[in-house]
Amino acid sequence: MAFAIKAEISDPQAETFVFTAQKTMYGGKQVAAGDTVFLFASETEGGRGLVARGIVTAAEAVARIPGIARQTPRMSVTIRRIAIAIATRPLGRSELKPLTDWTDGRPGTELNFKFYRQATNKIVGLSDEAAAFLSGFFSA
Image 1: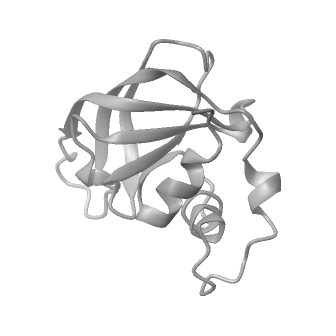
Image 2: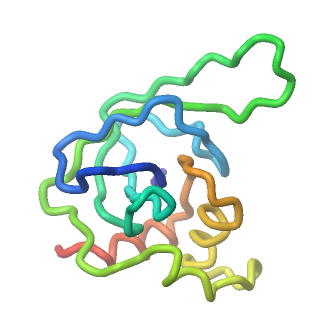
Image 3: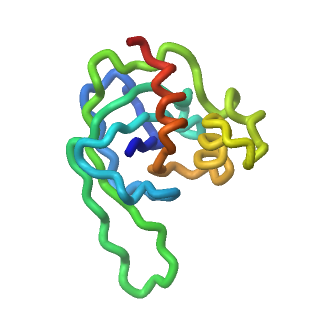
C-alpha cells in the first residue's frame, strides 16, 4: 500500500526524513517499513506541496496518552528519499482546490479530501489510483 504525508519539510532534497508523532487518518496508521510514501511540504508551514517520494525505513506507533478519551492515532516514521524522486511539477493546495466533488472518484479529489478538507498535517493511506497519479509527477 502507498501512503502520503503532509508535514513541515525544510529540505526536500534531504536523503532521510524523520517525522515524530504525526497524526494518522484514512488508513495512515497502517504505514510500515518498506511502504512507498509521497511527501508533501505543508503550505501552512512555508512548503509547496508534493516534493518527493521515498520508502519507509522505520515506523512505530506512538502510545496514547492515558486519560484522554478521543485521540487521533499517531506514528513516528523515518523515510529514505528515492534518489531520483523529486517532484518535477507542482501539486499542492492550489492545484487540488477545484476538485471538490467528493464522489467523482478522481485521484486528485481523493488527495484534496484527505489533505485539505481538514488541513492538519498527517499521514494518509492512498488508493492505487492516487498512488499512480502521484507517480506521474516524478521523472522515470
